[in-house]
Structures are given as C-alpha cells and as structure tokens.
Image 1 (tube, rainbow, N blue to C red):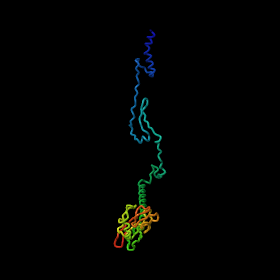
Image 2: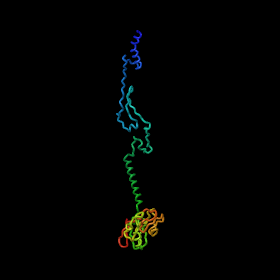
Image 3: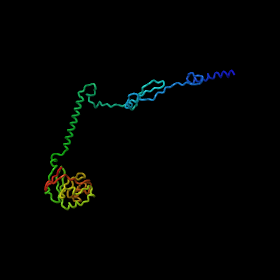
Image 4: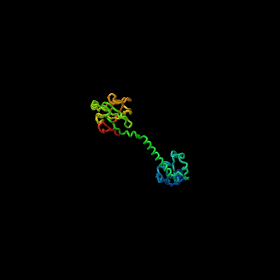
Length: 268
C-alpha cells in the first residue's frame, strides 16, 4: 500500500517532467496545460517605395521582408536578362564632342545651320531633277497644233505629231459612219458609242498609241478596217475601238475643237 501511495503521489511530477522535456525545458503547471509561445505573422507585402514598373523590370521589385528572428531587410532582385549592354556610338560621334568637359567649336547652332543648308541643297536638287523631266520648250510649243482638214481626202488618214505622240486624223466616208454606228457596244471590251467618240461624224481623231504596250498601230488595216497593231495583234475598228487582241482599251481621243471651216485645233 505504501508503494502504491508513493507511486500515486509521484505521478503528477512524472507527467510534469515529461512535459518539460517535450517542450524544450520550460516548466509547466501540474495541471497538464501547455503555454505556447506567441509568433508574430508579418503582414502581406504592399508596395510603399516610389519605384515604377520600368525600374522593376531593370532591377527587380524592391520589397521589405520581416519574420521571426529576422531583421528587417531591403532586397533587390535582379534578373540575368535585364543586364542590358548599352551600345557604344563613339565611332559615329565627332571628335570635338566626345569629351563632355571640352568646349567644342561645333556648337548646336552651327550644326543646326548645317542641317538647314543640307535640306535646302536637297530641295534644289529635287527641283532641278523635276525640271529636267518636264516637257521641253519645243514639246510645249506643240501642245496646240492647227490642222488643215482640206488636205486629207475622204477615206484616208493623216498622221501628225502632237506632244511627241502620233496623232491619227481620219476622214471617214458615209459607209464607215453607218457601219460603226450599227455596232452593238454591249459586245465590246471597252463599250463606247461611235457618236460619243467624234464631234463630227466625218472626222475621227485619235492618239496613235496602242493601249496594250504603247506600240504604234497601222492605219487602214486589220480585220475591222480601222487600225492594226502588228506587235501583239490588236485590231481596232474605224472608230478606234478595240475589237480583237490583247489591248484592254480603245484608242484615246485627244481634246480638240473645230475653229472654222476646214480647220481643227488640237488643244491640251
């Protein structure tokens, strides 16, 4: 009985001893309750430094971290691919401006004046090039020509030079006028009525340049009795309309007017 009583009186002490060992040597009450140490959990990170997103891309986000047994630290995380190698433009710079401390004779106003002079020189060069490509004086003098229609017999064509291009003037007989007026324009590649292409039915005036590749057709030839281009086989009728071959359009009609009886003026 004495042994049992002694073991019974020692049992709280044994439990307390076991508890002390399992809790790192901290004494506890005999009641068996364990007091846990208080741990401070850090708040979630919030940006408080005036740093932009672009700086984050270069140096990584700057943040403040803290925890148990850790001092407050500032960490800057850098990524390897953000170590940008800046190019060196020393080869393209003038020797006078390489040294930032040296006084250069080539100042900003001087460089600005040189830029203005370069732009003006380029303008003069372009102006001269455009002038060189413009029509010459003799071509401009031929922009208006007067044609005496009395020298062209009926049924024949005459060729004149206008702005460096051949000009076909055709004196059509009544048979050609009637024939071309009866053509069904719905079947034509470039549909145009004959009376739209002439001011006087007796006279057809067209520019003698094939609308395919710029060749010069032959008058009074072809399958339709008008004009024929032997280069690629384009056939035009007596109204200058494309009827067969690769040409996409009719022969062009220039601007003209009848000044008086027997004379016509080509204007442009």
